[in-house]
Length: 261
Image (tube, rainbow, N blue to C red; front, side, top):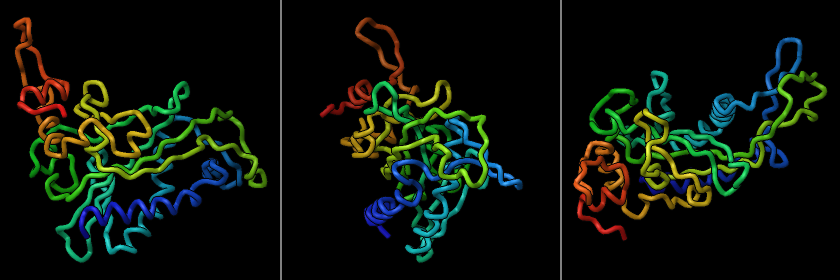
């Protein structure tokens, strides 16, 4: 299957699962249940929500993979890239990398989200044949994608417990979920995504994310790759004669002799 066919089919699939994970715009997952049938509400912690969203989505993703003759390989070690490796059962050379990313809308500006990281620009990104922290060498994947969920957070009392008969009364900790499937480079920013770690940051405008209008989208994946492979490693002399490190796309394009348009 060619990359564009994969994108088209996955986006169609994504449009079919909204009602499977939400009811009346609210997440169907309500909490944890124990042997006594006591339900404990979920935390608003983003890491908790992210992991449970992954678990909730996974059976549907497997259904998609089986329908289209793909095997799904999970990372063999924690924090390996990507979250999901899709391998064609007809041709094992056809591989697609999918990272699952979740984040919340900015309460003061709902056009923006909190952003997320798009994987490392470290060893496996620089050396496309490396096996370090990656399931298969980077160059073996025909496409690198982000399966994302953006949601509104709902503040609830996390200490309330419910019985099984109260299920419909339990508030959801997230609502108004927006699901999207995009190529990683098309939603990347030109800034690191997490402090001192070597992670690529995303853009934050939600409409631009959904429609793949990131800073690299018009320049292509080769420019994205070259910029991030060399991120923080190219030094130039500024107009005052000072040495500075390139950390902006505008500076990089000028250094490479490329037009910004």
